[in-house]
Amino acid sequence: MAKKEFTRTSFLFLLGLIVILSIVETSYAYYGEGDCAHEHEIVYIDVPIDLDANIILDGNPTETFWKKESNQKGNLVIKLSERKIGTEIPEIHDLNITFIMNDNYIYILCIWEDFTPEYEDGNFKDGLAFCWNINAPNFSAYYAQNDMNTANMGGGRVDAWRWNYDDLNSRGDVHYVLDDCFDDEGWVNPSEPGRDIQAAYNYSEKDNSYYLEIERKLITGEGFDVQFDEKKTYKFNLAIFNDNQYEDHAISWTYALDLSENNLISGYHVALISFSITLMLTIISIHISKNKIK
Image 1 (spheres, rainbow, N blue to C red):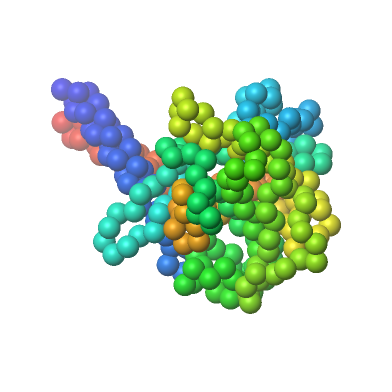
Image 2 (image 1 turned 90 degrees about the vertical axis):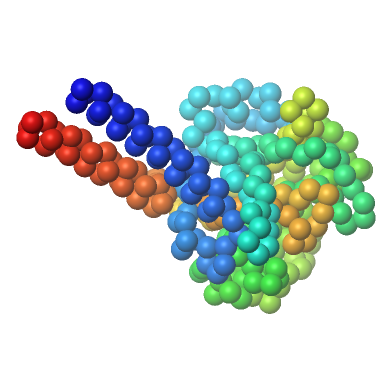
């Protein structure tokens, strides 16, 4: 009888933990208010180094390095939230992303659903954007009044990569990604247009998803670009655009590529795991004590 009770208690605990995790993961994907990294910690990504990785940009992730087991630590699903208006629960989107590096390049594969693909009407387009911290001391996914500047982050620069669907680029064609920068006063105009980021996209009618492959040199030598040349963490956030522009998009919280020698685990996940273990040990201890009393 005691064994059955223990089994039932353990099952209910695990079920409750799954529910809590699903609620927390979704609710923490909402737009932040202020420095949102303080609200949910930062998710760190251990980027695999694959010296044999050599991409053929065509929007089709058929290269073997994308599927190599040792490279899967660079893969995760990032949740992006649309704007939260009042008490309305915003829609949450999933973006499957993989980061891989070799000696000279960083490769990024992005996959996300879009049921109205290849949309373009003036400035209203499908798209994806990265914001990479260069030297903002309090980098965050929060931009006050939707102004693209770092005034609320303590100044500094942010490197902005922006891919947009363009009917001039067919599926599988290699093309450049917009590479801009903003600081505490707004957008900065580099002396020459960025030509460091290349990409190619494809769209699968089977799973209604964009497939976007991105390639950029680790080091460009340009002051307006993030340079992946140090053993440290590189913070970033993402946005996806669906037939729209500017503030009408879904945005992620803050993530970071961890290129340090001692990879970190998100403080949020450490706390959650510690709490779960402590709670489980408490339940077991109570169960053992009851049996001793009997």
